Image (cartoon, rainbow, N blue to C red; front, side):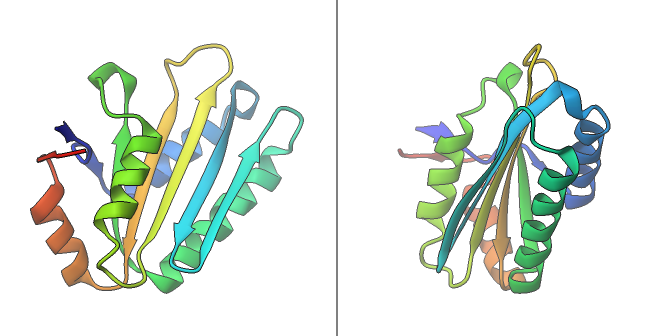
Length: 147
């Protein structure tokens, strides 16, 4: 059993962390993955791609998610805490929220090119109703979940 959802942060803290990464764009690459009831899309930020272009796609994806599902639970994944992998957390979030309608799961990974010290890996679980978010937190935050 694994604890997938153990490092919840506020969306404001998450946005601040994203901004810090973009203040040194030459040091990062990464990807954004969006999964919802009717969509699945991955956008990558590879070397040579404009930071402004990638940032605009992230901003639009988060804005679109906010318009559909305004109640967010954001989790930071870190290697130094021996957290489960981002894809494992993403899969768990998708599987555990299947019974809630309209949930959007977004993963954002901004990975350091020179070192993993400043990697940023976030999982946004976006709910249409606050009751769904509260239920999810009560059932899964900080708890062991069978894989």
